[in-house]
Length: 190
Image 1: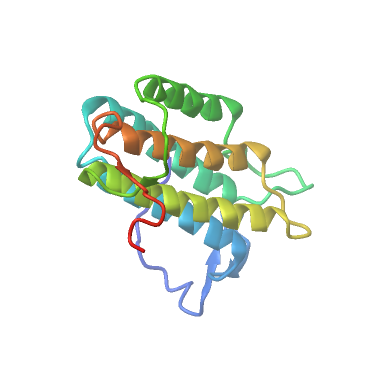
Image 2: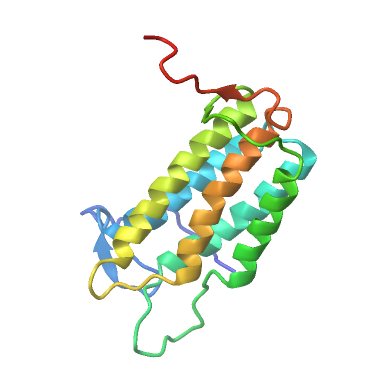
C-alpha cells in the first residue's frame, strides 16, 4: 500500500515530478501528460458515480481502481534493467473484464441509426465527458509509445481503447437503455 504522510514536498516547485521509479521528468513530459489524463478520466468517472444506478456504479468502481493501476503502469517506464520491485501493470484480464461489461450493457440496447449527441440524463452527459477525456488519454499514450526509447504495454493501450467504448455504451444505458438518447440529425439547422 501507499503511505502519504506529507502532501507537499516542494520537489516539484520548479516544474518536475518523480516517476514511480524515482526518475525526474518535466511535468509537461508526454508520460506525465498520459497518466495525468488517465487521472482526469478517473475524476470524471467519480462524478458520474453520483448519478449511476447500482449496477453501473459497481462497474465504474472497478474501473476507477483499474485506472489507478493504469496510472501506476504509465508512471513506471519499462526498462531493460531488472526493477527493484515488481511494477504494477495492466493485464489482459482487466481488458477482458471491460469487454464483458460492454457486452452485458450492450445486450439491452437497440442498434443505433445515427450518432449520439452528448446529453440526455446527467449520468449520460458525464459519461460522454469521461469518454472524451479517456480518448485524449489514449491519444497521449499512443504518442508516448511512438517516442523512441519509451515503451507502453499493449494491454495499457487496449484498456484505454476498451474503456472509451465502455463509457459510450454506459452513456446509452444511463439514458434509459438508449430510449432517451439525443440523436444527431445531419444538417438539421441549415
